[in-house]
Length: 523
Image (tube, rainbow, N blue to C red; front, side, top):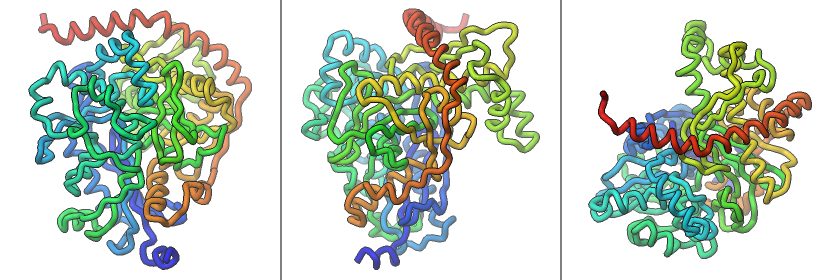
């Protein structure tokens, strides 16, 4: 039967709903990405502590993106085995009974509930909730977002039929079903890792009942019954199975084959993360790391950073605007041009450090008030130093998370890199030298999409377990440590960490000033 299906239905569609874009892929049964399509959408920041999106723009990107990639590859409706999903975590949307949004899609980067995170941590209740849910206490968490709504929007709380995330919104629009997989549920701060159900105390803090949340389902759960209109728009048959799937983070581990002890996945896209797989839920006594579900047999432990590729975008748009424009005039990718400038500076940027905390920080500090800092700037530094220091700053953040993970998981033997940064040989080598560990890059860096497709095969009964990932993942480029650069970064790490801790109180002060200034009328 499997051989027959392989002939008749040779393709899996993966839909990866990200923070800045949705990427759709056609993947063959042997793991080859045959085509991809990406649709971007804006992030709205109406205030310093807000980060929102239009849920309908994202839904349209999913429908349009699937349709575009299906047409691009020339896939016939009857050739699709399933559509499987990956999604960014921690989003929250309030909807009415007709699935009409009552709020924007509030993203992980939204910090409006920072005060509630601080209160939970001070009371000790935060650590108790974390130990059961595996979600660190931070404004990214839907738990904290709901606490903010509870006190600031009581009318909305009464009016809301369901509080859901962006993937739940997509499935509700497509199938009129409210379902949330265990993976995304475990990133809400509301889900008990041991009993795989909503946590009563967390729900009490949030001021919601289970009826106001979606039905909990495994990551391999199948939904069918597309309307004729949506099926036509996506180039699919009406009976095409849709696999609910998991979060982009845990699927990235699956997609790079990071399953064995000692194998760690590092992903840098808009944000970033360092992750390792365990076979049972495991939380961090210090509360610095997350623990999220992949399947009933695998869990992912790690930590996210807020500021990954978004820092490079900021450098391009705010610091190196003239250089970026010159690159465009020459027909060169501005990022490639800026990377070339950075490569002209030696490791350590001649003593210039950058704390890339432009949107606060998650792991390992979990400090929504953290802010970006150039430290050590002198007259001898040029713009190219500032570019390299910014890229190194992202890697210092990755290193801090990797150190926390090593504390409970042991040292990494090899690191698998994925995400947009993995396209850059320069940035990959920088990470290798920063972490002092060999870094390998799979042939395809679309790790979350690859992971979603593998999960789709498992859900459809086409494979028996996720060990099949090793048949798909071909390790391409390998980077070895430049010992000279490693010693430089080791020396600077203590300075970087010290600068952060010495500025911690001042981060709070400047954040308070910014909030007051933004609320005050112009003089």
